[in-house]
Length: 188
Image 1 (cartoon, one colour):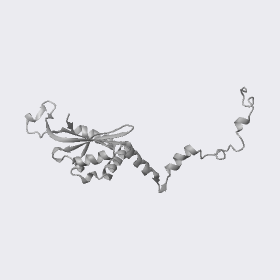
Image 2 (cartoon, one colour):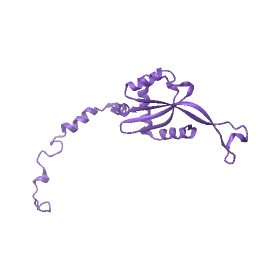
Image 3 (cartoon, one colour):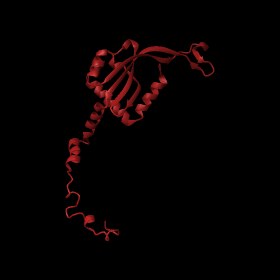
Image 4 (cartoon, helix red, strand yellow):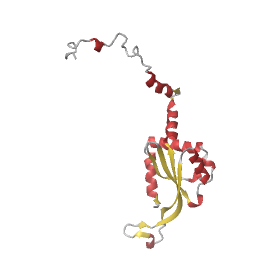
């Protein structure tokens, strides 16, 4: 297929222009770091070339590495142990060639230069969304120095913590005590 500089630039612009996607990418990187992937050889040389593709359960990114700096496959095994899917693929990176004369152009009229092909490794990491979403929830819990107990909020829906006293209905339902003709309608 081959990746060009413009495609990569557009991917990076898409990520950097969307705050929520950028936050998710930071949580993705935090998960990668917490699994100690960077201890394995060459994993720190990757460049984002595709993604993130975000679905209900998965967070997918593709990273490009120079062919001579293939990431250690033991790092991929470590990611797979936590539920990620990792795929290796050989591809090429298309870089505009230096202009040395008229023969350097693929289109003389448009002054479009020929591309040089550089072999690369593409590593696709498909991570379960739970790692990213749980981290974002953990960050929300500490807001302005106040802990928010999300478990208590979740239980409130099931336990019906808001009783009738809280709703101002201790004296009975005023609408239920009205006669049908007082409401301007028929009695049912």
